[in-house]
Structure formats: structure tokens, C-alpha cells
Length: 316
Image 1 (tube, rainbow, N blue to C red):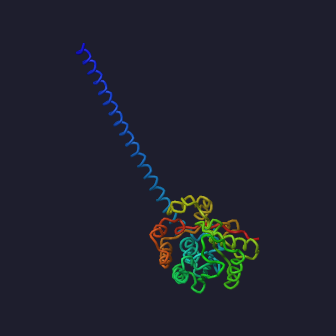
Image 2: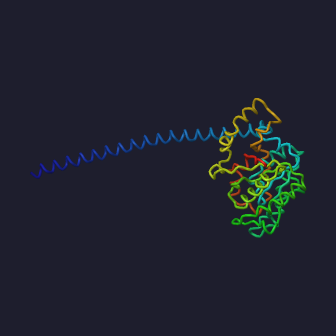
Image 3: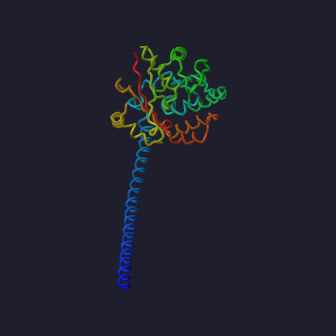
């Protein structure tokens, strides 16, 4: 009886061992299949990534070197302006956000006189005087006239991440410089302020309100704010941004034009060449007090140092 029970026990143990080995073999086989599948998927992800990068770089080359001066992408109101004014909130905004627009106009057409009106010295940390001096180097790199490179130190317009600036104060200053410099084109933030900074948004609201209330206001374009994810995608966001300009791009390829009717003045697309990108980096290098490791990454990864899309404010 004992011998019979031992045989049964041994048989059960053998069956368990065989089942365990079979299960282990099946798991190994499944793991191999999974690895092969993941390797296959990874190859396709890498290929798609490389394709997206190549498409973006090619599009950047076409839009900056070949089609950049076409009136349907950069309206005559900008590239043939006599006096262009960039309105920002803090020193360094001009090169962190607006350089493709600034250089797209000033570097392409040296007869345009560029001006920069910064509503504060960026004195939130007590270094406003330093930042005013740094701004002059940035203006030189961006082809902005040195006599029109102004950072204000108004008591009601101090750099403050929680203070909404008074619109009337901004508008009175804006009108003064428009008249003094005979401005016929303006570029500033849109309602999102690119980074969402409250001072950026206050500048946008005041300028937009001024333009909407004045029939004789200069042609004014707002820099479009995107989502955080799209903001830090290097050139990879360019194809998506260019989608809304598809017909204009196709028309520019087959029928280049230096002039265009009013329906093409509602928005603009300015893309930096590699030379203009180097000027952007040179401009920001003037802002020594603002240089940090994350800004190094920003100057590579941010779409705003590579290209700008703008929309026009329709005056009254």
C-alpha cells in the first residue's frame, strides 16, 4: 500500500514539474513574441520620428529661404512698413518670443526702421538697471534701432507676476510713441501672452483695445499662443502650424507675389533661417542676468525661437 501511494505521489510530482516547465516555456515564448513586437513597434516609432523631423526641417528651409518673403505669408503691412514697433512687457521678451517676426521684417528689408517698447525694466528682483543695459545688446543683434530700444520704468508698470497693469496707462504711452516714431505696424502678444504671464496679457489687452477703438491705428499683429506641449517641440510643430497656411504656401510656390489683396493680411507666418536663429541666440546672450540651464534648452526646443504665427487685430 505504501509503495502504491509513493508511485502515485511521484507521478503527481512529475506531472506538476512538467506543467511548470510547460508554463515557463510558454511564458518565455510569450516574452520573446512581446520583445519582437516591441522591437518592431520601436523601429516604426523611430522611423516616424525621423520622418517628422525631416519634414519639419525641409518645411523650415522652404518657408524661410524660398517663400519667406511672399506677401501671402508675410503681409506687406509688415515687410514694407516704414516704422515697425514691437511692444513687450520685459527685457528678453523680444528674443525669447518675437525674434522670427522681428528678423523676418528687419533682416529682410533694411529700409524698415524697427523700434522696441518694453513696458518695464524687469525689476522684480532688483536688477532693472542691469536688464536695461542688456537690452541694448539684444536690440543690436536683432537689427533694432538703438535710439528706439526703450525699457520704461513707470511706477504703475513694474514687473510683477501677480499685477494686472492698467490699460489706460499703457495706451497713453503707446500713443505717444506711435506719434513720435510715426509707427505704421505693431507686433505684440495675444491674449494668452505666450507664457501666460499676467504682464504679457495686460500688454496684449491694452494694445488690442487701443487698436479696436482707433480707426487710424497702425496695422497690429498678435503673436499666437500655443499649448505647453506644442511650445517645446523644436521645429516639429511647424507642419501643424503651417496647415492653416496650406493654400497660401501652395499659391506662393506656383505664383510668387510681393503684393497681395486684403484677404491675405489677416495672419502671418515668419520662420527663422539658420542665420537668423544664430542672431536670436546672439541677442539672448546679451541677457547675462537671465541665462540659466533651462534657458539653454529653451533656445533649442522652443518653437518661438524658430518661427512665429501671427494674427491681425481688425481696427474699428
